[in-house]
Figure (cartoon, protein in one colour):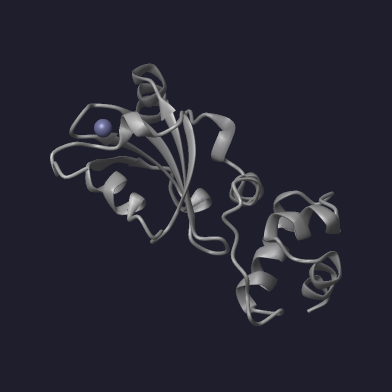
Length: 157
Ligand SMILES: [Zn+2]
């Protein structure tokens, strides 16, 4: 990767989870060539679509910078991008913050909070429950990568 005009698109899986500020600088290399095409907007502030200016590949990106600090990228074709731009029709993959947190967890890119009742954990636990009222404590704990007991305490605040 000495050639700065190259992009990383071909190195990535169709669905990739990349840690922010990872040691190899993978995230910087990826985003160097991605141009923002469309933001989902307020309701889903983490979601946007981008196109690589080097190779033309389109990506849907979820920027999860609240808990585990990951980018989730999904390769999308031109039709999918057009549906996003023209009709605000987004693929379902990244519409739920819970799912994005789970993707980070499944990829093993999780954060550890020194403060077990960190305000951002409290806030996110409540947001997860608001987004899916029937969510179990175990699911919240899994998404946040914390013990079930800790998840319970977060929701008591
Ligand atoms: Zn590219």
